[in-house]
Length: 490
Picture 1 (spheres, helix red, strand yellow):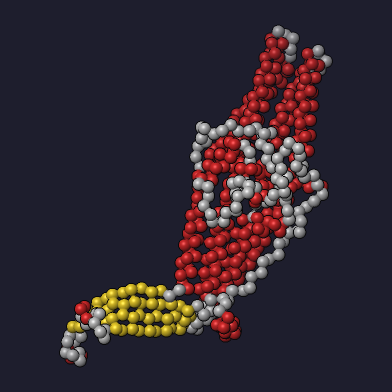
Picture 2 (cartoon, helix red, strand yellow; picture 1 turned 90 degrees about the horizontal axis):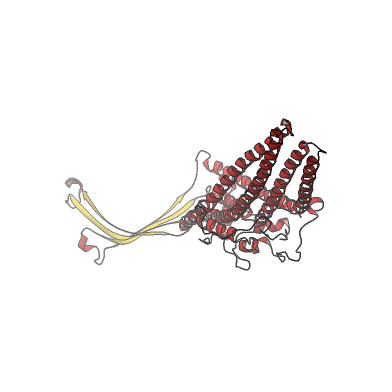
């Protein structure tokens, strides 16, 4: 019954030459029409005097060499784009998908081949009309076969392969954007560990000096053992933190080496500190709808959806007859020397129609599967949009709050530094106990660490926002956008 119900569609196909794919309608974006505003989103950075500005350019139009000005980081990104194995796999996936599309597309055209053969046959004498028991037949000619795609089955498969190829290209583009941001994030993390290590070393030296003075007071009988043990705890804590941070710093470098695909070169140019990174802060966010053409992961999801839509057309076409033509033209002769003599021409032509009658419900199940796969791709497409919306919104929230947080932490660090100075002065004069000095030392140490961490998080949030808005694909601003399947800089 299902085959009969689809016959009117088949007649329309024969007349119009269209496929049986459903009409594609892009799903509505399941997010708000604009990014959040007010509250933490209210204060966004603007171009200030002395700071670099995006000048209203969208993230995809800003080259990564213009977003990152640290020459050391620029060289690391360049190395990563040449060496990273995940990116190499993405490029090979594109080649495989391109070949698959070409294989599927070839089914739309006739297949022609040349053939030559010899056929020797023995026939019993009483059955041979010529009384010859052994006969030879030599042939040379062309064989041709062609499935006429009346119902668009092959065209739908070709459209599916093309969409999968384009999806693979977009996946490669997304991988490159992600790689640029991951290298930058890991580099900034490594710098932060370097600065944290310096703070810990300074704290350890101060604690050791303080412990030495406290021990002298204890040995001379003017200090208490309690003061000595309290001073020792600060030394031990700083030493433990130093080891933990050196371990974390080494692991951060290992992660960076993994991303760039080779050991860190010895001739890298000097790098900038966290404060000297000078990333572009005022890149406009635009509207959520802009992400549909800026985010390669969203475009990849839509291409997968188009592939699933085309697969429905192929599944529908399987309910209808397959029409194929086969034929050959050449020469036949009982002897090799007579192949090309006059009168030896031979040809054959055989149209064939295959009509599905009973296949145990296979075609129906394939169609149900194709419809289910399309629903899955719709959900994944919508999820990709929601993920992109959340990442941009998170980045805007971070961009609107980190400056004020860092300013507050700077004030706190200055206050803790002054507090330590006053506590040491009061202790020397005998006004206060040594515990107040130790507490002030610990609080200053924690405050300096929190300030470095906030600076690092602010920079990585700007890097992640740049990627979330689709930035990192071109090398320099003003360059023409490459296609998603274009080769990398390596």
